[in-house]
Length: 324
Image (tube, rainbow, N blue to C red; front, top):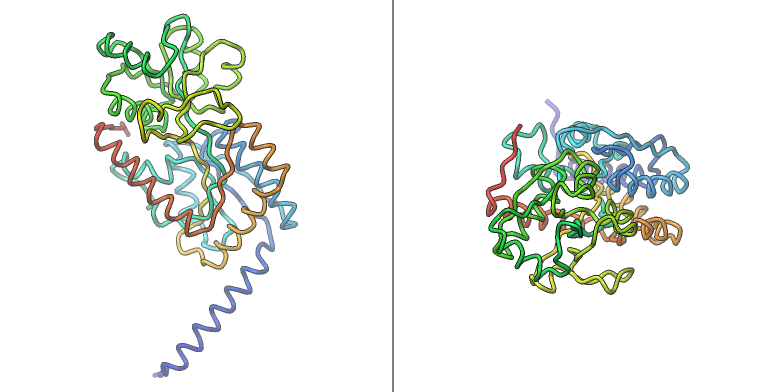
C-alpha cells in the first residue's frame, strides 16, 4: 500500500497548479474550435466571427467557427458540454442555450450551469417594430392604448416559442397589462417578411436584424429595449421610459466545457477583452448596433446567473411552454 503524507499531497497539488498555469500561458498550441449553435449569417454568427478572426491573429493559431444548429441552440451547446475541458472547444451563443432553455425544456442532455462562463462579447437590444400601414401608434403609450382597445387581437410576430423575442413580448404584456395574439415563426427572416407584408401588426426583434428594413421605411421603429437610449440613436426612446425597469437585449456569450481549468478560462477571457479594446473590432461591432461588454470571468459568471433568474421568472409568470 502506498501511503501519502499530507505534505506530499500539498506538494502534488502545487505541482499540478503550476502545470495548469504553464499550460494556460502557452495556450493555444493548436486549432481552437468555436461552436455557434445557430445558423450562419445572423448576429449570433457574425459577432463571434469578428472576435474569432482577431484571436486567430493574436494566438497565431486557426480559430474555426462551426455552426451546429438545432433545438434552440441545445445541440451545439450539448456538443461543447461533452468536449474535453481544455479550452480548445468553446461555445459562442446568445441567451437561449446558456440561460433560458433550462427553464423551458423539461429534459436537456447537458447542464448549462456546468459550462464555464468566459465572457460576454457584446449585446444588441431588442426593439419594438411595427407595420406602419397596419398600426398608427407612434409611441409605447399609444401601442399600449391600442392593444387595450383591441382586446387581445393585436398580432405580434416572434422568432419562435420560447426565444428571447417571445419572452420580450411576454414581459411587455405583463408589465403593460395588455394581451397580444402570438404568431411564432421559424426565425427572424420569415417573421420580418410577414411584418413587411402586413400579415402581422408588430414584432419584438433584435435591432441588428431589423435595421435595414427600418432604414428602408418598410417597418417603423417605436422604441428600443435597452436600459438607456443608444448613443447611435439618441432620438429613439426606450421602452423603459414608459415601463420602468424594462430591458431585453440579445447578448453573445462565450463558455467552455465543464471543469475547464480557471487558468485557461481566465487566459481566454483576457484575450477576448484585449480584442474588444481593438478599434477595428469595436467598429465592426458598432456597425451591427452592438455594444461592447467584456469584463472579468467572474463578472461573466455572475451575469449568467442573474439572467437565468430573470428569464426564469418571466417564463414562470407568463406560463411559457415549449413543445419538444
